[in-house]
Length: 295
Image 1 (cartoon, rainbow, N blue to C red):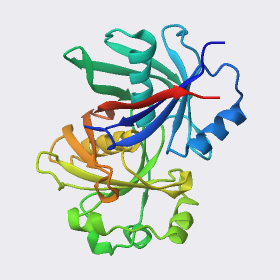
Image 2 (image 1 turned 180 degrees about the vertical axis):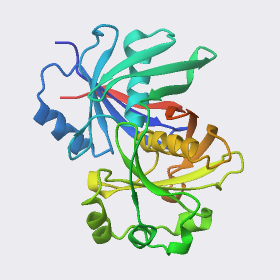
Image 3 (image 1 turned 90 degrees about the vertical axis):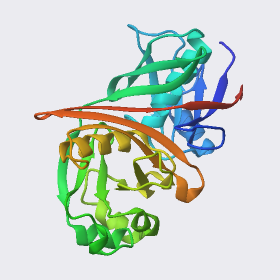
C-alpha cells in the first residue's frame, strides 16, 4: 500500500489561519466507513474528506465527505480544498479543471493560476432548488433578533444546491453581528425543515471592497458557527439572482464570512437567472498549512 498521508488546508482563505479548516486524507483503500467517520470525529473540523484513489475513474476522482457526525453528499470548502490537493499532490502540474465524483454527483472545479500557482478555484454547483418559506417571527426568535431586523422585501426560504440551507435576509451589518442562536428554538425549527442550517446575510460588509457579509449556523451538524461555507453561499448566490436582491438577476460579488469568530474568509459568488434556470458558481483560494503521515 502507498504511504498513508493527510493534508491540512485553509479554504476560502487569503492567508494562513483564516478561512475554513479542512483535513484531506489520501491512500485510504485499507479503511472502512466506520473508521473514516471516526477520523472525521477525531479531526473535528466541520468536514474531512477522503480521496478514494489517486487514479481517476472515467476522468473523475471519487471523494467522500464526512462531518464529525455523518457523511454528507456535498459541501463547498471540502470540494475546493480536495481539488487543490489533487492538483498539487497527485497531478502535480497545471490543469484547467479537476472533476470530483461526490455522492451528489460530479462537480467540476476550475483553476486559475498566478505565476504558475493556483489562485482562485471555482466550482460549478448544481442548479438551486427552492423549498418552503418560513415565518419571519419564528426565525427571528431563533436567531435572537426581532421581526423588524429581517429584510421584509425578500422571503426566508430553504434553498439547496446539494446541501440545503435556510436563507435569511437581514437589514444591516449591525443586525447580523447581533445574531445569536437559541439552541432549543433552533432544533425545534429544523425538526420541520429539510434544511438544518441557517445562513444570514446583509448587503453591508466589514471591509469596503466586499459586497455582502454572511454568517452560518449549523448546530445540527455539530457546527455552532462556520467560518466559510461554499455550499450555503451557493444557495445564497442562487437566491440573490432569483429575487434580484441587488436589482439584477446576474450576480458577481465578494462575500465575507467568519469575521465574528476570528476566521475572516472570502468567497466569490457568481450566478445568473434565465427564466427558471439559474447557474451558480462559487470560488475561493486555498492555502496549504501542513502535510504528514497518519497511522
